[in-house]
Each structure stands twice: as C-alpha cells, then as structure tokens.
Image (cartoon, rainbow, N blue to C red; front, side, top):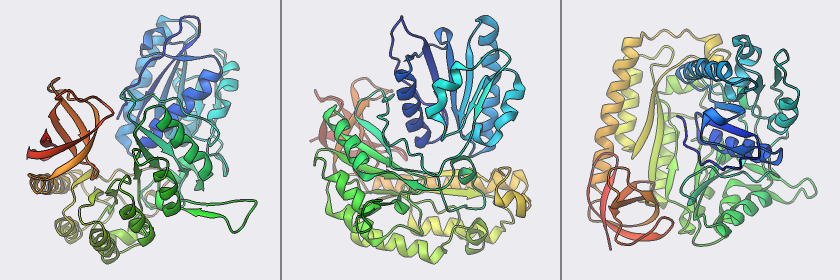
Length: 453
C-alpha cells in the first residue's frame, strides 16, 4: 500500500520524491532514507514532476506487490524521457531480492537494499547514464540507531520507532529473512531517546516496530549483566510520559511472554491491543509453515492475554490455500477464528515467493479458484466477527487519541481507542492530538460511531 507523504520545499536544493509500499517497517525506512538524503542536501517533494531523484521503497511479501512496482517502473520511464538527468532508484526488499534484474529494465539507475541506505549519497554521486549503482549487502549490525528519522506523517500525532531489524524465524512461506537479513536489536537508550524527542515535538503515540518485537533482546557489550528484553523495553518507553501512548507490532505467538502481558496490564499508556498472526488453525499447516507453535499453544496464549487484560484487542493474519492445505485444514482455520473471535484480520491467498523454503520444498498445488473460495469464506467470517465485536462496544466509554478529521464528514473527528478500534465522533471544538472520552452509540464492522462525553 502506498503511503501519503508530507512535502518539504526549498527551491534551491535538489528534490527527492519517495513512494513507499508495504508494511510499517517500510514507512519507517523511508523516514530514515529521507534523513540521510536531507543531510546530503536533498529536500522532499510531493510532486514527482519536479524531482531529480525518484525512489520507490518496495515490498516483496506478495507477488502482486512486486508486479505493482514493475508497473511503476514503466511510469518512471516516462519521467526519464521527459526530463534529462532524472535518477530512478528502487530501494528496500524488492531491491534486495531481485538485485541486478532491476537494472535490466534500463530505467532504474540505483538499487539499494534495506541495510545500505547510508551509502545512498555516495551511490547517487557515482551514477552516470552508463553506470548504474547497486548495493544490496546485508548487515549483521546495522540498525540505523543513530539516525533520527524525518517524519513523513501528516497528523504529527503518531510515529513509528524501529526497535530491531531482520528476522531469524525463517517461516517457510516468508521472504523477509532473505530480504532483511538476520535479527538484531537496537540499543534501548536510543529508542527511549527517540520516543522522548517525539513527545517533546508534540507526538502523543509511538508504535514500536519489528518483524517480531517479542524477540527483542539487547545485551550491553560492556556489561554482561545489563540485558534488556521486550517487556523491559516496553516499560522504559511507557515511562517517558503517561501522556505518551505506546503500541507495538508485530508479535510472534511463540514468543509472546507472560512478562510482556503483565507489563501491558501495569501501564495505562501501553495500548491494550496485540497483533498476533496465527496464519492457520491447522497443526499440519503450522508445522509445514515452520511457525514453531501449535493451535493449542496459540489458544493458550490468547486465553492468558484475556485473563490478564480482558478487553485487549486481538487482530491477526491468515493465509488461505497454503501448499497441501486440505478442506479440513481450512475448516480448522475457520474454527480457530470462531473460537478466538478476532477484532480484525489481514487475510490473503498464499503467494509463492521464489527462494523461500516453501518454494524449494513444497508444490503450490491449491488451484486459484479454491484459494479464492476459501479466502472469501475467511473474509466473510471475519466481517461477521468484526461487527459482533464492535456491537459489544455499544454503550462503553473509551479514551481516544484524536488523529484527524474524518474523510467522509469534515464535522467529525476520528481516533483510536486503546484496543486499536477506530472511533468517529463530532468534533465539538476538539483538535487533533488531544485525548477525548467518547461513548459508543452505534457501529459498522470497521468503525465505532461515538459521541463525546
């Protein structure tokens, strides 16, 4: 999904235009890239027609994401035809996966993987019409901890903080370990400092990001006794200010610990929402996916969360039609969803990614029409459960952080409750960035309709 960006203008400097696709990690990476390029003399523009440097920060999680980028590359070709000297760069996960293949388009001048952003100014300086530049070396140390990202968000209320990079899980369907490298955690002091800077600049919510935040672990190289796990980090960030909300994403079911759950319960400003991707409700599929937990383990973790935080919002990811999935495997997924009753879900058909363990070991043998049928069943079930979940909120009161004006009605504001549910309510003189108490009066499957109290 392409994210909107906030242009910064200065007519005397070269301009960079950045398109961001994919996950929240990519959004944060674009902010790191912009920080590096600003130090090199560039300014951001929201107008592609005036940019001398055009970057697409890409995603490789699913094939359709890559196909979209190939389509954009053809649009970038028109920019090069119209304006001499325009530099086109592909950065991020797709750059890491496809490498030199991107240069074969004769449009792309620059290919940079997720661990090479510091080298962007040097790479750009070496580009000529006959010498494109590429750097896709993965690192075991790079976390960009010393770089203050230039925030691209429009509301100035909520910001992402990357706490770690890479992933060691190697789920069989997932390309992330091959495009983002091995897992490494960032110094917690730099994370807290970034949160403090954001709070001082008016932000009232931070979201801690990682491929698997629960496996965050930092050990002080100067002291073997000074170790920080994710629960400890959560507490450190929560203590920045009681007015600073703390969210995090994404959690891996095998690593969500009791310590994290109890830490969430201890602090009012740690939001009561966990995104806990299950992917499948079938033990056979979970084993083939290399998820390292069972259906029973997952349900036990959900039970623990709800016993400690009864009103905790729970969302998930689900894959339909993984290799060898039987009708019973699919029914197992539906039954798990029914048992948990998720508040929301990201739901996809399985998309084979070249180079992954699944692509090497298993046949993508579920016909497209069956994948589509199963996905539609999953979506229909989740829509029903989302509506039922929201209907249970009617009459309840929530503290909401106002994020902006409703797109449908300028007289309405919107924000999220602690459980991550979106609330829409009359403005009544309130402004973006304020906390407000609302009472839910009605709902849709996606939104709580409320009034201010």
